[in-house]
Image: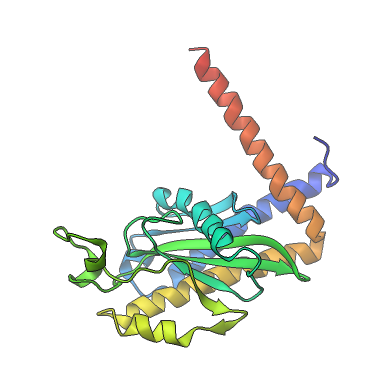
Length: 236
């Protein structure tokens, strides 16, 4: 496959995409409220293309990395064309969208450039509390998911930049440590906004077409390397 972006520019863009994931990761750690996030690093951040395929990441918990793509794909599945600039989606559904337990709360933000959807940024972090019958929302003897806390089935936390204040109030009223949970939520938003700012900056500097092509090129390279390694296993 031939690419329009020259290899030197591509390498610069590729490294910038990688650093975007890492900067999002650091931003979340530095602004979070819970020790389980800023000390244990029980979270992960990532950048996907507009199809929801993971491009780069900032990794604390490896298990979360594979969930980020499913969160974005669930967002695309649920909302389709109703995804707008300024939206932020909240999801911790354990059955859809790459869920784990309810404390692992994910946020998804679409990135637009001149009205065009370019990519998504997403993160998943372990909140101290999402309610439920036990403090910390960690139950060893629960008999159904409703005892474990609040479920967020891919809902809009922000709609075109307008915060859903009723949803925030609902969370505050159903968790034992609202300052921690809401603080971590806002830290996740800050992380996503960091990623959005970096990608939009790259689009302005190198053109949106170059960024879109570079993301696909990066994924193509990863696929080729993986296939090459798998072929070596077949010879053993």
